[in-house]
Amino acid sequence: MTLKASTLSSRRSRPAVNGVTMNMHAESVPRPIFKIIIMAYTKLIYHIVFRPHNNAPVITEKYERDLYMYIYGFCRNRQYVLYRINGMPDHIHILI
Image (cartoon, rainbow, N blue to C red; front, top):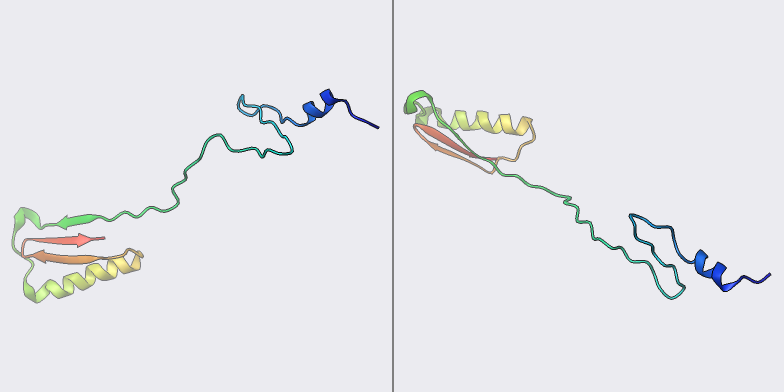
């Protein structure tokens, strides 16, 4: 059984996808028309500043380490990455 040329050409093309017909010849390989770029990784870093009411200097050196350890434990329990923590008597900077 032999096939006609018109039958071969109709079998070598795919139906239209989004209005574009892709020809399937033996020597050519279909190529994608559009490249899709997918973002697979996102990293957000937050700089948070806490301050007491009226900027009162209530964070003394005596309690500073305990406060920082409490904040570190809080972040660790929630699986945050705590990059830096530091402060002054009237405010604290946290980099998460």
